[in-house]
Length: 423
Image 1: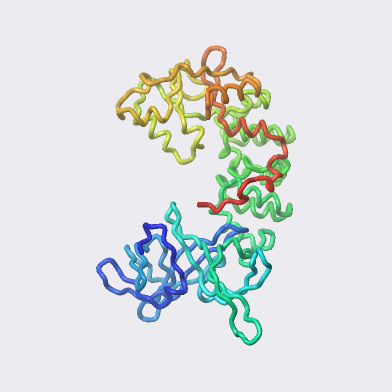
Image 2: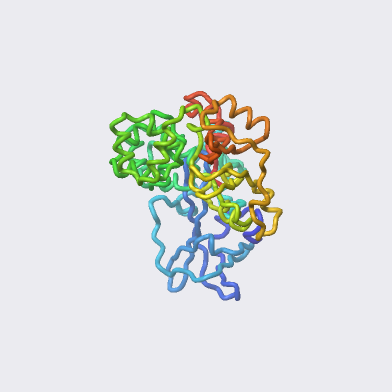
């Protein structure tokens, strides 16, 4: 079975089978699998295999180099690093550490022992533990009880609570999670541990997480960060979220942080702070995709492909006269990405603008904005001043954010599905 299909592989059965290159030459034998356990019910990720090569050296083969797993062989491609394998703190060896381990069935509280671990490949081509082959304890004269296959989230006992993990290990496990899920975990930590984790995240990660945290948590973190670091993190945040956070800080600290930020970033935030929080100006981002009339469809699609853009911002581009930095020259209209996909790459965006989408002014209140979104099925809405200069765009996620109660982030029990699996 190849890794390209959604196949299931039991890892214990791989022990001892040969590892070959595409020409059929044997490179070594599988000795173990390496998984990274994650928080809560998030399934562990299989990162690679421990392979024994001559002379009796064990090396790490990442799953990105595994092209096929058949009943009797593993095929790998590319150059292998022959450096001796050294287990990291956040890694768990399947055969050596998981097999025979006792866990508890969620539905019955019965203890079972692990006999094998099954992994499957996701749409992102990552491998995740999906099932466990377990054995119940024997009864009476029977030494062994019944064996059965259970889903990963049907057992407990293989994931530590976030508060009990070393900071380095916790950070490693948070690294693959969505910002909203990381924020949920950080929110539940003690203030001391919360700051330890916040200081361990890089600027971009921390910025994304701050945007998802309740007001009290993010203010607490920013107030305890070193001033230069706090300014750097604010620069990484979306301008509208950074403005909201700045407005929650004591005036002296807010002024100091704005002074430390890059002038262009600080100016965007100062402009947003002049608007009411529940107005279009207070909710908009000042960094939508803006193009001049002579830009082409290829130019627009290149901008949309930016992975740092939210889906809502990437849904459309705004065409204006120069300058194209907000506040721009005269706003001409909007190009929707679906229309861009249907046009030849050399077509000018000026010929495709939708002039029927009526923008709003920066003082438009929340109820007017929500009516626009509902009436026209929008995911983003341009905001212009009285001279028709584009000031920014309001996205649907910010509208929903402001429609929910202030403490909605605390009600994580109401979220469908709980913590995501990071796929």
